[in-house]
Image (cartoon, rainbow, N blue to C red):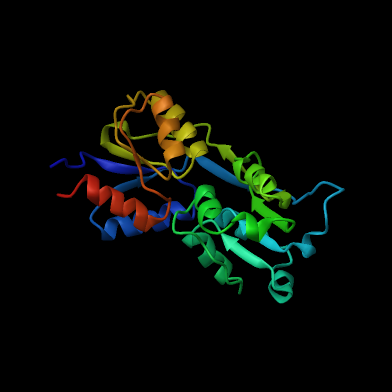
Length: 243
């Protein structure tokens, strides 16, 4: 049975990287925390012609960072008005709960999971849907919701900025964990700049990022079916059962 030679490089941004490292340690996996993206808050701005944010009927939160950087948003107003509030995954739902906001999340922690499990046309058609995310994120969710008849406003709350330099300990890394396509792209550049070859196993959250990694020349990419620690750990244990 295969074994992990070296430690896992955790490329996700903080605070998620440290939480993942702690849970991996409990599961017997050594890791090195080296975020490849920095998160910068930005002032929330919408198109002048958009409807008032407080009138949203469905609020879809696409990351924990959107919660952390959305302090000025009318969370309790949405709750009081009975808006449906949805989180892309478990960690985002926990961050919302810490604000006193109860949110549903799909089993598959991704935009695809939201669309398949929680946002059918019957729910979103002719409804005001607010998407809370970062700048220059994927637009597939907004496009599909509009195709299903929703009136969508996208509100970017932060930017992901690639880390320019990072001293990656190539010799000690045995596999890579990326939590997004942007993270995979940044890790690829930093790994190659450090002299590493793209032959390591990489663990990513979706089929889309598997294909992205393979397009970058990483043949050993594995789908964790989500970015949550328990999905990452389950996939690692399946790949390295003797660890």
